[in-house]
Amino acid sequence: PSGVRTGLLCVSGLSEWRRGPRSCMTEIMSIPDPTEQFERVDRHVKDNEKTHVVMLATHYTNPIAEVWDSLTEPQRLADWFGTVTGDLRTGGSFAVEDRGVTGTIQYCDRHRALQLEWTEAERTGKVAVAVTTGVTGTSVTVRHTVADDQRWGQYGPAELGVAWDEALAALDVHLSGNIGHTREVLEQIHAEQGKDALRGRLVEAWRQEHVAAGAEEDDARQRSEAAARLLG
Image 1 (cartoon, rainbow, N blue to C red):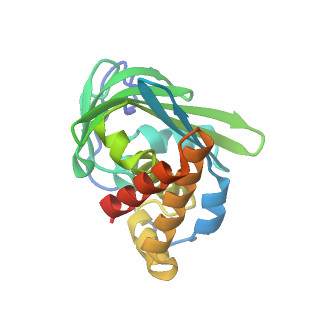
Image 2 (image 1 turned 90 degrees about the vertical axis):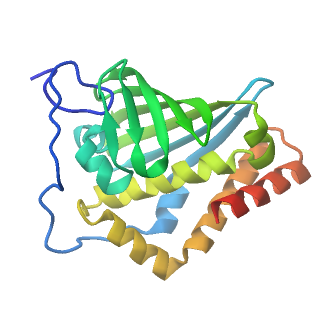
């Protein structure tokens, strides 16, 4: 029934805080191809004088209800994104403890959209997540808007873009039958593919998008290099 089920940003009644992990599988079921996932993401940068937007859109074969639960239930978020606490309803505040994120839930339309005020590294912006269903599964779009501040001037879009790319990749692992084992699978992927190599591809992808949005080549390169050093 409406208003009872827990959802990050979407509780209109009682919260159903279920502590501890969901019943785990006895073995890892699948390891997604990181190259396929990388190529499935559409990335865009939108610049203007006062704000900048980093946008990512991707697709999962899972039904919209499962994707929505993975994006909103604290128990599932803990498996692929981070430990979420707070007053998880529209107007409430939340924190992602292991990411150093705090924020406010501004809007929720179940199975459609989330809008958050998002503060990380002393920078406050807006995060909007939209989900849509189709014949072959569910599309997810993330838009992160920040002011034209010192961090953007130093790191450009890669600082935010790479973090969201990696989050969407973790969600892909989670949704591929690995609930309860997402971090373990990610460690295996990083060991086999090389975490630095995978992250390097993402930094380069965001450099290219920055140029496509109008940035000068040298400026985009310098900011991407700074972001790569920051991200490690």
